[in-house]
Amino acid sequence: MKKLMYSSVGLLLIALAFLAFNMFSGLVLTDARLDLTDQKLYTISDGTKQILSELDEPINLYFFYSDKATRDVVRLRNYAKRVEEMLKTYAREADGKIRLQIIDPEPFSEDEDRAAEFGLQAIPLNQSGDQVYFGLAGTNSVDVTQVIPFFPLDQEEFLEYELSRLVQSLAKPELPVVGVMSGLQINGGFDMARQQPTPAWMVMEDLRQQFKVESLQSNVDRIPDKVSVLLLVHPKNLPEQTLYAIDQFVLRGGKLLAFVDPFSESDHSFGLPGEGNDRASDLAPLFKAWGLRLVPGKVLGDGAYAMAVTTGQGQRPVRHVAWLNMPRQALDQSDVSTAGLESITLATAGILEQVEGAKTSFTPLIQSSEYAMPYDASRFAVLDNPEPLIRELQPTGERYTVAARISGPAQSAYPDGIEGQKDGLKEAANINVIVVADTDLLADRMWVQVQELFGQRIPQPWADNGSFAINALDNLSGSDALISVRSRGRFSRPFSVVEEIQRNAEMKFREKEEALQARLSETEQKLAELQRQQDPSKVQELTPEQQAAVQQFILERLKLRKELREVRYQLNADIEALGRTLKLANIVLVPVLLTVGALALGLWRRRRQA
Image (cartoon, rainbow, N blue to C red; front, side, top):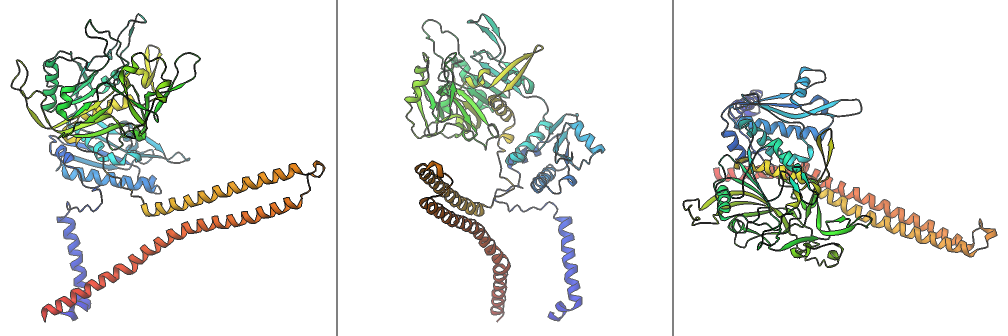
């Protein structure tokens, strides 16, 4: 037997067996996949599988990627490979309901014209004018088209969400219905102070371009079934029947985006006698049942994110600790509603907290810095100058939540129903709610400048408030399966050990550099003092003291430069040492381990045979 294995015929048989195994696996095991990546980048989530399993009719996906033009763009090619593999996974999982075409639109070709017709964006690649296509177009049986114009490289973690969103939009092309209930004049009204009508808020104009909007009265006793998402803006003093209608809407699977406020500066209404002039809004009984609360009577102040405002013409700007510009680091970059946004501005926002013992999950979307504290909302009712507020700031070191996503099992706020409605739902296995403790962020003055041009209103946003609202509604308007598709990891994994070595070495380098600059300044100051003491007629001559100082400086500079070179050398030496260790492990250690394992296996077999 051994002679046959080592003979030419034996080697030929082994080669044929190897070839047959590869042919068999290529034909029979085509759908077999083993995802060994740390974050399962090539394994689609259960939510995506559900979306694909619910496809009633086939859809067409056209992946346009300039393969030949990007041969030298390594990062783009790696990401494009991941997109292609993910699309192929979708096609396999859809069991024939997705027809995928991968197209390389070469310049001046029909494929390039087709990509342009779909509305895909061509990105310049170099100074020669070469352009790159890297986008996706999809169509369904009734010629509805959805596109991703270009896959942004900095949004790689949301790749699966964007693909699933496109597929679901093609499977259910009708626009979702957003029911709007507001205690503010977001659809336009009348300014009593100026005695003139006011236009609709720009966020509402953006909303109508992407959704079907249905206005709801504040005394409704049932939210219509056709409403996909309920948008509440400043729900102030809602009657019990409306609160119960909202409760039942959420429990039966409706999605909710609620903007509440402890002190709404956009609320210019005057209360009736006995009601006072309260500018607060809350959904306290509903929030309690859903596992959160709006801290009553408290406004968030933050010294780190305070905006500079002017109190009058000619006055110097002062920092307003309750008017906040929340930067990127204050926004949850792992949630699709806030990911990629650069800033959101707030005015006298409230604080959200999770109720102890809550069964729902409480995910902060917008948080303050640690240099923050709560203020009494009553302080802002007659506030003329915000400057004293920052002097009163005593940071607690806690990060406060302004906006949060609530999901999971929840109980009804009215388990026994209300008068006339006793047979409602008492619980839900999963709810999807986003709560924001500020209503002013939706007002135009907080995020957009609107100009009138030939009768058209031209918005010029300077903050991402509108994008946040639209992103949240867009996410909530999808199915529960789509909402469950959250951010995934990135394909590119950093060399964390190497980066740590570089950071440590660079820190040493900066310390040495600062020491060198300090000594240089000290020596130059000493030279200047010596020159001031000498005879003005002999400015060009150096005294012995100056010559000694200069000589000492030269020697010291040479010494420091040598130390700097040593630090730089050590940086490369540490990295090269790590590389040598890895090479040694791959070239020597792994074969040795395999050899030892094979010898141990052979020895074990011999003993077993003996």
